[in-house]
Length: 156
Image 1 (cartoon, rainbow, N blue to C red):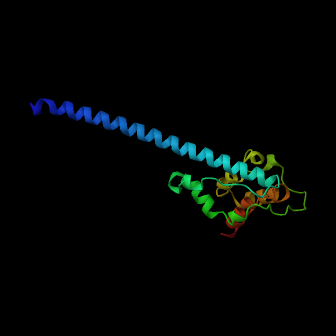
Image 2 (image 1 turned 180 degrees about the vertical axis):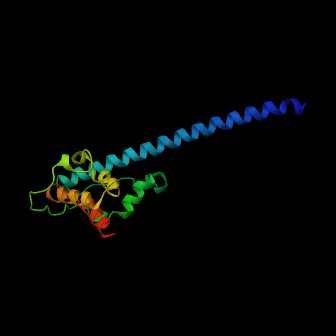
Image 3 (image 1 turned 120 degrees about the vertical axis):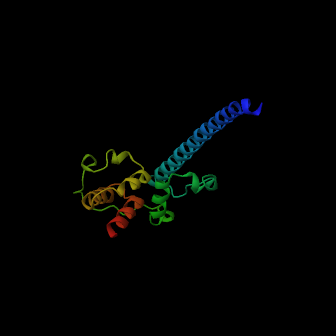
């Protein structure tokens, strides 16, 4: 009797495991997507508050975002960004008005990107492209996270 029923039991067990694995993958992807969007929202909110001159931005439930759930590129970008804790004061903008226009920058839609989004793209740029972004950023928003990452990339 076992000989007759065994293939059916195996097929049922395999189907059950496949179904559970599919559900686990789906839940995992949803969790990563949710954490990423929440992190982007909080970073944008903090940047807007900093740009508006408000230096008191509350960071709630940091322990709710464990490093294992964040995309590796984001973890690397945060780990390599210099002095993130001291990023509440923008750098002094350069007085030179001879900087690039947003359309001439090597990153499409640069002026609408958050600092965290720009930092993730800087590693793929050439030295002259980094210099163009540094000039533009210095003469406009003066975001220290971006300028610090450019300095770090130029030094290496």
